[in-house]
Length: 192
Picture 1 (cartoon, rainbow, N blue to C red):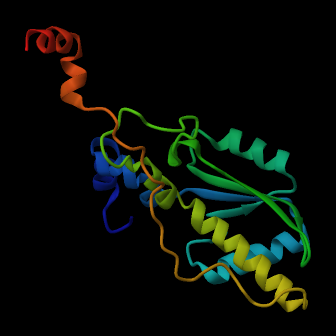
Picture 2: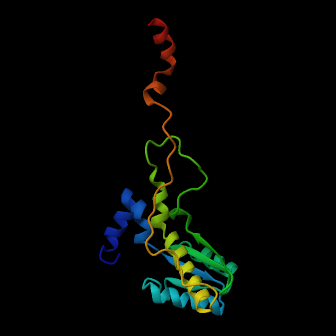
Picture 3: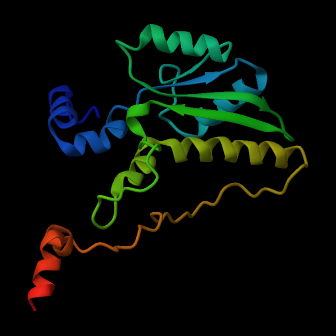
C-alpha cells in the first residue's frame, strides 16, 4: 500500500474494476475484538505474534460487543473497518465466536443460484479476498492450540494446505438461440 502512493491507491480503488475486487486487500482497515477478557487478550497477543499486520492501531480490543459496535459507529466516517470478532466463550473446551465483516467485502448470500450467469460466477472469490477465511483460520488455530496445550485435543489445527473450488454451477438447460426465437419455432416447425 505504501509503495503505491496515496494518489495511485486512490485511482486504483476508485476508478478500476480491479480496485473494487482487490480493494479490501489494499485498504484492510481496523479489526475490532470483544470482549476485553484475559482469554481474548491472549488471543490478540497470539494474532499479533503470528501476523505483523496486527498492530495496536489495526487491532483494537473493546470491553463488550456493544462497546465495539458503538466505536464502529462513531468512527465510520473517518476510519475503514475490516471487521469485528466477538467471543461468547473462549476456553480449552468451549469456543464460540462470531466474525462480522464489512458488508462491502463479502458476496451477497441472499441469492442461492445466479440463473443469468453464463459459466462460472466468480463472486465467491470475494470470500477469499475479504479475509474471512484468514480470520476464521486464525481463531481456529488458536482454539486448537489452546485445547492441545491443556491436554484436551491433539494438535490438529485447520489444514495448512487447503484447496478451494467453486460450488458446482447449475447445468445449462437453456439454449440462448432457442430462447431468442422461441415464439417463431412453432411456425417454423409447422411450415416444415
